[in-house]
Length: 473
Image (cartoon, rainbow, N blue to C red; front, side, top):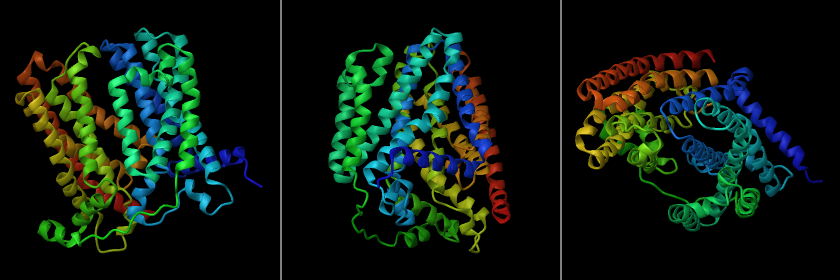
């Protein structure tokens, strides 16, 4: 007898809850939606007081939720490649159809339903509640908030279904998947209004029969297509590679006495996407900033200084490099060998400087071409110390599990507060820079240098802190 959808759905929800509450504790994880709502409300208040257009902010919320759906939908599927590259054949929940008496198609449908409903309450609803300041300070009508929840929830479901369909195509043909991505991006660029007219976003702007049909049918059709095409027993082609560890170890010389620096760099190179993912992730941030800075007067009636703005946001983006350096790392692993965690953190910091800083500085150089060299000089001066601050704060608070930081409410709140304490003054300085260019530029550089010093201090204490935690565990 086949397992019912209701049974699978309830077990998947329980497993999701068990996983998160085991990692972070029930009360800590239960407070996460509250923190998301407060953070979203603070952001909405900031933009509302700055005179931002409500319509553009709500449009941005639909975009963010849609991208979140794309990301959530790929975690259980595409993430397997990254895990397999480092850990070998590993079974995730979605692959349990290999061993349990349940069809893969039935499991995928229950999995998608679980993701859509679970994350509605974890992220989407708190983000909509966080839009309340736009009702008080802006022109958003209170009666429109339920509509906003429905349309953003629809965008999330569309993102999850779309990513599942894309992954299904990807498992059959990478070229076909690339063609699909190109067609969607091209459609959005050339006929964006036409593409969006069949999405839940159109329901927010002006409900039409076509938008209602697209909002309901597209997530269902994408889920059915993805589950039909996805091949989870595929195997990557056998690869051979030369011994790059010895080459790196020789080149790093005295900076890599125990080989942990070579291992750190090699881990990033071997993971899916290689070093190109560093260029892509920071390039995506830079591209969005370049567009916003070009058209920002349409969003907020002020134009922040490009150099300081780009450097501040790019430094925050170096968190992804930290995350990749510590992906699949475990502090208990190193306790088996004569390698101190202080040595490991030193190697990670050197690898961080080798990987994250050149990429960020390259984009700042490109920003100098787009926005003027004088503007970017301040950015170059603040980028390096701010990046060290991000590394130090993340290392001290999250250690070897930076991804867990995002769901551990107290730790995430501390991380956010630490980032905001430095980034908000710099953003304000970027906005006010034309009033006193020299004084505000000098003040920003001094603040970033102080932050960099704090980051190095926290980095120096991180190794001992996590070594003590590992021994106590």
